[in-house]
Length: 498
Ligand code: 0RQ
Image (tube, rainbow, N blue to C red; front, top):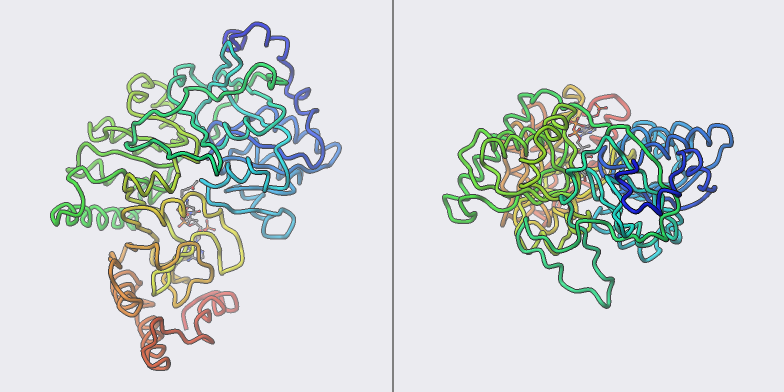
């Protein structure tokens, strides 16, 4: 790594992962780089987990979003996490969140850096651990495949540990735009008006003195393969592309649409693939996570630019990116999640937000986080940042889950992340409900008619009609004793069916 640590005076700070991990003390607030399994530190967390195995203790872990197995996975396995924020997807960690062991603070991703800078998250950050491509002559950090909250954690922490990862190509340098807003009352407008606007520096400002240790690492990002695009995802993609055609025809969207934001996972990937097969061109993207579909759009000549905070393709997608980095880097930019997910920017540039729901209710409220109202799945992630502030807010879900035993369209959501006021469009494999301008009672009929599975449609319509009658056509008709009875039935009998 000597050539990547450009100031020779810093070479004296290069130590083993074990030595760097020894700096971390029980109950420290540790802020790391990383957003999805991209750009997170790996060697130091693995060494820390080994140490925790021998002398059990816990830390508070703050990241950008979910991270790879070497961080959340390794630390959860040794029960090393006491508090966690702002998003996770790890199986062991999820189990510990749901058995009371880990205190999880599930946050809008755009807000987490600000909360950390203000010291709301249980004090200040004691140490930032950041993955880097290189360290400049002045001690500034060139990030790797994600930006996440790394810049704010470096700014806030007294001590910075840098993991220089040689598996990350040096050509990533120049793909980042680092901008940390001032905090109120000094904050100024974030000057992004187009997805390709550069407003900051290509490195994380740090300085020579703050860097305590530098560790070499060659472990690759733990990216995961996508599933085959299933029939349901394909249908959802078709419905949304049809809607965009209609919106363009009716003059509500420009011919090249507005900047697209798309969540992660198989449905999101299917929707982006749908664009590849469509006749839309000159598309732009302002999102969190850049996945394989974006490379397809670039290759098809349909993407003008994509801004995100993380590059998290499948393993083959990552190879494809590394092998063609000179071509792709012209069209891609990584920003801190505070900027990629900024509500201010989303509202200004008029994002089309597309995220996945766990369940939606008949009035258009959306649950993105909780299973049966109680168990945390992953977290709200960036979905709320975009949903409230987008020009057009869409949510996708299959109409049923668990082989049809669960209806994803329910009388009342068992937990609400996105309210009826935020949601414009709901799409399932059954069809699309356009809720714009409708009252709750109108919305109920459209959602049940267009989105519910035929097995549940009569039950939902029966519920709605009885509630409408019992409340004498109240604004939002509900039978309070029955509203969550579908979830109760599933918990008790293993099916929502009667
Ligand atoms: O559980 O794996 O045990 O079978 O939920 O569901 O259908 O595989 O869908 O992987 O795309 O995840 C909302 C969780 C969807 C995700 C969610 C069960 C289902 C399965 C997963 P099993 P699928 P996906 C971008 C923006 C919130 C954050 C967000 C998510 C599991 O997209 O976390 O959007 N989003 N951020 O069986 C009970 C239902 C269910 C259900 C599905 N109605 N009831 N269980 N499941 N529907 C990302 C970031 O911000 C970083």
